[in-house]
Length: 623
Ligand code: F6R
Image (cartoon, rainbow, N blue to C red; front, side):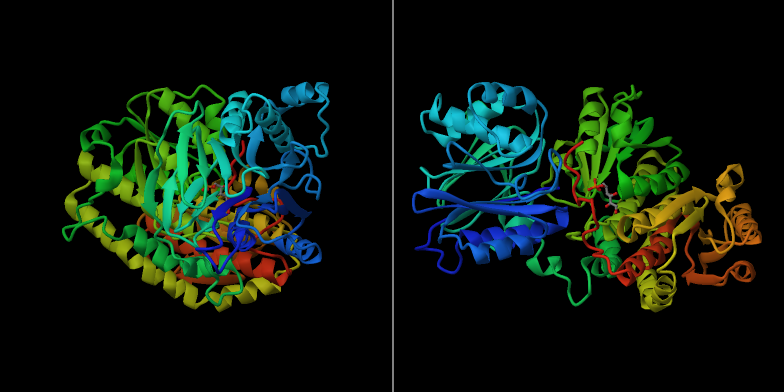
């Protein structure tokens, strides 16, 4: 949600790009976060010059082509995902204040904006937009010219004292060419360090083309950049520090690599995402070595329950984890949507391990739920794909997934990497607590090690799924059924179809059918069924086969995902896709893939932009 870029450079040392090039390139890389308008402001010739436009970045570029901006080495850029006020040119950022001398961009929600606005209106300030951001800009402008005596950093320190909610704010002022001031509370902001130039971004993609040196900023910090300096303080002006790190993503891994969309590329990245997440986390004897965890093994061995907190796709990864961790470790695992957890009175204590799962590490609902759990004394562990993001930074422990940058809004490779990480956690806990023999752990790790090539087998047969998807481009509704770990896979299959193909889709626990959903079935209703392995629990397999028959008898078109050699399903399926044999608990890593390909191809066949579905943002940084 909302992408932010800031830049301060010097033309003498950095000849090949000006502020506008950096801002537009950064915004392009941040497009994946989801947005509905974009804008920039640069400082040049003793004035602030701004352009902004509703719609995609290309609209802003056309606007700039029609009304060019002067050359500049200082500027801020923004992609907006509407919260206060609809997506219009007027509500787009930057917002100007102090008689047009100051420009501000903002990510987040300022909860007490109405009171401040009333105060400023009473003082004679007028507003052009419906946004909370313009109120923050007006407040900053007012403080700049009064109490702060023309010091932009001091004005920012005063302004943030008045603001409640979540915000990253960036401001430039015509009296300070070469200076960008930023503040962050509960919203993401990373500093990029260059030679004779410095950058700010919502995440490192905002400046990855220009530098790999980055600094994580802490909560409630203000940073002021110039071409040669950066200074960090807390909201009271006391010196503070960030944590420097090197960005290990390269710009190329954020490119489409010949695929028609980022989503399809990321689906095909999945063998590597799983392999990289497994890499280096066990020794040759099958002993898990999760040294990075930061919680003492003795403490982990003593936990009495696990609560997984996550949203959307990441929550489905948590649901898969519940089956595996409970089976391997005999520890109760609850899975809860982060936003529901926080607003009841959950029972957690110091023996509870909170495992938050988040691709972005910035999902506000999850961040708030983690903070709440910490206050209750729980231990917190983050499974996260984004280095340096807020949730892992605020958690007691972190287990990074190594899926690489996920650009498409709909999550694919992060999901498989999250499931993989939860398996590692489950096996690690089983090792610590002695729930499994070392040989059993080694066998499961060996099965996991075979998963990347099995995913590749599925991908090699993508054509079969794509053909089905194209033939179903006119479907109005698709249902998905699964039992056991197949249930969260069914939910994820339905979510993918909803979010990118805008088709009504529901995932059900197959056992729930007769309790209501079977009434939805009539002639020709497409129903995907995820069938578990025939080996292991016989009853599980045969129950699902019965469910296929039940929906088929009522006219459903049955589309079945089953294991190689599962002859029992053939007679009841209109279409079958066989995935390689694998133990049931690991099957989500294979069975999800055809459903992702199905959604991606069907949405593409309908002509939709699968990377940036309507109304959705990659990173949901407001509650
Ligand atoms: C769906 C999707 C979302 C995210 C959810 C949580 O494809 O991407 O449902 O999974 O918004 O995001 P993270 O994992 O960043 O916390």
